[in-house]
Length: 261
Image (tube, rainbow, N blue to C red; front, top):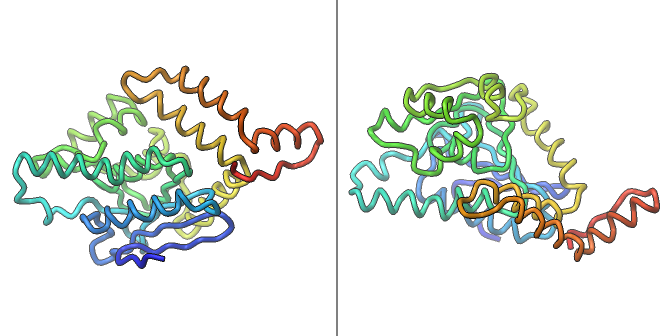
């Protein structure tokens, strides 16, 4: 099993917790961490025993405080474009389209690339001390890891425009009111609370959940008809062992035991 320099991995009862562990850098995303995250998500997605992934940051200060600016401060126009394209492909789009559910447990600052990473996850839970924002315009650049697209989808165009143009941070309760996070809990309870949600998800059909992720995401892809994607994925469920088990268990008035096949 691969050893990671910047990540810690914990597996229990079908739930994998991936912790970004660069506390001296407030868990900032550098090139090496992005590549490690890609590998970790890819590995867990292939692991039949992993039913849900929780992503969080080490310590009590930051989920991810942004990208590592020192790595790209001297980039050219061409290199800047390549940086965004590679990052989106390796991590942000990759996480959004993962067939295993991914929950972000936002345990502090989620700024710039950190908020973009949280938004790429399928949904978010925040600690009471969490602060979120996209401060890129204060550096003379814009969000490049999907922030200009995912933030409006989650909070609406007007709020997203204000957050991006003003570069302000919002607190956890505001993020909840905006629809950016689903729940706000005390920091000491964050991972336990998120694991509770993950456990509910893990009991359900993994094949159906993967199909649901694809159908929901289809609504946000240009040129794709989300309703057609739903019909296709709904139909595909009928060919799975999980569908047979789920419907049989319902008719027999017992709890289903899904195989994920």
